[in-house]
Length: 103
Image (cartoon, rainbow, N blue to C red; front, side, top):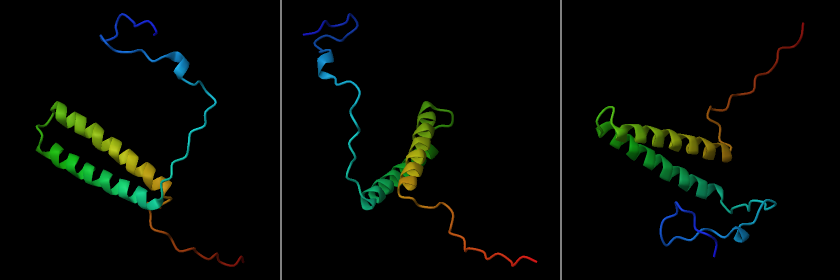
């Protein structure tokens, strides 16, 4: 058993360094389809709406408000990344314009 550092909590085990594999491992792809991503996005939107409601009812300038602000911005970031993964456009598609003939 490895030596326990002086700052470690009692009765805790330090991870054995031989168990940690270093470098060279490729991340394994997950099997997530578009429907799963849509479900995740729905959950995140509902969580964001709930956080907005709680933030509106919290005292101005409180610690809770600052935590909720960071939470909401994190959820917004996750939603934008999932939207990117689904390759959805934020703007509506524009009709292609035809060029005028040269004079």
